[in-house]
Length: 450
Image (cartoon, rainbow, N blue to C red):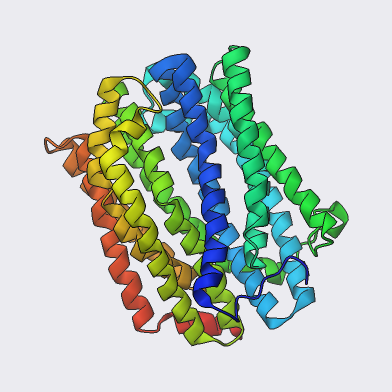
């Protein structure tokens, strides 16, 4: 089978390193899209333009996380059939996933375009930045088919145990995005629309490169209209694995939108500082997110091959890798967070606010190093439903109320929100660990096997 990598044999540490490292690079490059747009908007348009782009970031992330979460489900299903050697079911599952992803892309693009003003009002976007945010976000929604298409390709490749090839696509696209950002905004003197067009064009390039790669390798997935199919039974399996994961991802980012709204309510400076800090935080936890995806695919393949102990060892190795990564990023953000914030703006009040926030929030990285490998194991074993329930409880019964109390009812203000980012992952680390230790995940996996 072309484009497949057997994760059921060989050194576990090397497998996870080889799988996770390209994902880390890919995730960093993908996160650079909005960060680069913020940088050029800040350079050529000041705080208002930069804030217009930054407040759009969490909105875009909600859409992407739904797709990414569903992609994790698709990866798990594909990895399972790959381990079982069921090639025909594998082919139909992959092409059914393509049909579902592309249909979702059309719906999200249309809905997002018309709902943009309402969404921006809902998150209390500052009036000075509202028009810029609306222009930027609507263009991004129009090009959502390329973004979703690229994420689909990544999901398929992860299911086949291949995380390296997509890294090259996104590297090329990131370079194009940087060049086009400067061309549109620096030379043609466009506003934030130029940054949005640069992002859409560059992500379209990633999608096209991915399709070309699949076709040249004569893969089971060709993205040809004649190969598309919709198998109801396989669609049900994809949804049963993907929807809980997608729901969990969306629930997290919707709660993050609430946090953005709280920060925005303090005014332009806090909105800008929070937007920058969240962007830096998103880069910092990307290694943990990559380990999550690596452990999910590793778990699915090994459980599919009947190697339960090896799947457990994969989660343990993933945790070790994540801790090593976060030690480095913690030191970087704690000591240099203010300087890094200065990349996006020269407003000293914004830099000071962002730096103070980051000195508190960066302690959450160690907790995510525990949470994400647990999540990967649970998703890979078919227990995405428990991850969703836990996320809903933690985000909406604890995180949002605590953030409001600490930020609005105490003198902490914006730093109150930073404190909450430390509290919530500690709860998830405990509940995930207990669920795995008690072996409740086995019931979910056995149901999938029957």
